[in-house]
Amino acid sequence: MNDCKAKTWPAPALSPGQQQLLEALACHLDDEAGLVELAADFQAEGHYPLAPHCYSRSVLYRHPQGAEIMVARWDAGACTPTHGHPQYAFVLVLQGRLQMEHFVATPKGLQLTGTRIKNAGEHIYASGREGRYDNAIHRVTALEPSLSLHIYSDDALKGICFD
Ligand SMILES: [Fe+2]
Image 1 (tube, protein in one colour):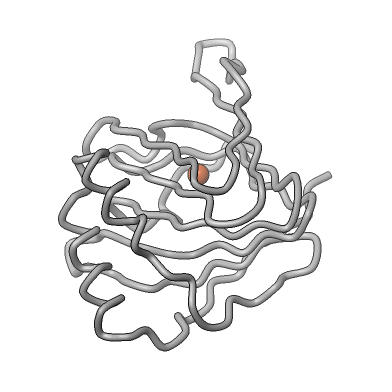
Image 2: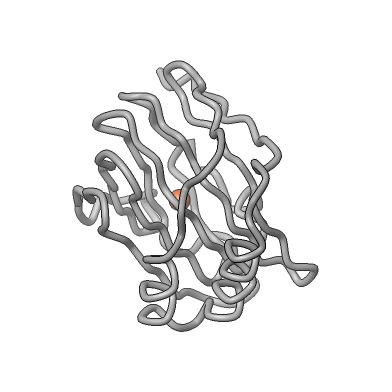
């Protein structure tokens, strides 16, 4: 059973340069190549809390129209519920290794379509339907202690949970 209930934390203090970078990232939600290029300059400075057997969410930026940028710190073995996303979702592994299990919704329930491992420096990007929170359904498991940067077009906690 997955009893990891991730908590959301305030961001550590960021330099003006990093704040500018977050604003730029939030303007490229529909541009995968732009996100990849900009996110390469992201520095995970400061403290991101460790949640034993789980993961912590530190929200770095929220745009009034919904965009959210956060860093997740993962303990080894931590696992998310199976969940969907708002229209745009970008995840870059900064440290460690994450397993992503991808699903599609069918009339008979969720069906696993593939499992991918993402190492530090690798990303996933998903562009789905506007106004929906069941896009790009997946479950993430940290295969080792990890850190990842997440950029969404809306509050990620609105993503629908299927567990
Ligand atoms: Fe996700």
